[in-house]
Amino acid sequence: MLMDATRASLLIIDVQEKLYPACQEPEQVIDGCCFLIKCANRLGVPVVVSEQYPKGLGHTAQPILELLEQPGNASDGGNVVAKMAFSAIPADGFIEKMEENPGRDQVVVAGMETHVCVLQTVMELIERGREVYVVADAVTSRSMPDKIFALERMRDAGAKIVTRESVMFEWLRVAGTPEFKELSALIK
Image 1 (cartoon, rainbow, N blue to C red):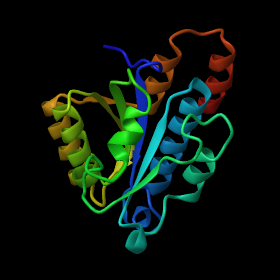
Image 2: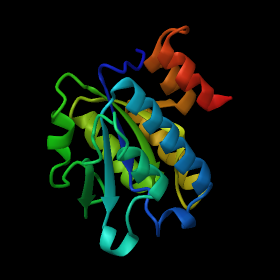
Image 3: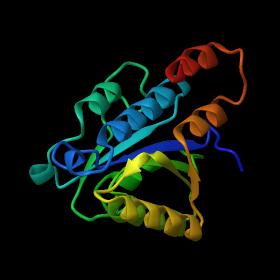
Image 4: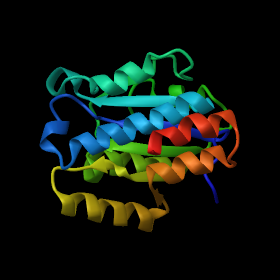
């Protein structure tokens, strides 16, 4: 099954000021999340961002927050949800944010840490019947083995492991459109 921009939501998990410097390839993950948000903004895909204990770990990386605040963002910058649980599912307002857009049964997931908050959220989304796509080049952990084995576990549970470019091209579906021209420039 292909990812579909009309059925998808984008979930960015815990890419926070005090967490990302400790993780592997943090700049690549922030760039990957920004890439995905730019695609989502252009194609009308709602974006939800979670923050794990922001009092201690700080807020979401500034480049991500700036994209959430841009006009045309389907979430209008108001979809940052604070949480204490590792999974985003029990966070106050998280399910409500996801349900604001009926018919969106696909969730594209990126963020930190792959083996903790990403994994637990993905497992709960699968349990709730969502079709989940984890963006391998937009997730990270403090150690590479944690990331690798978490991706394998999520795949075994039914999540599809994808790359950010595959998300973009599946959401676009065809070349030759204004959206294609604008978004394909992101990979040149």
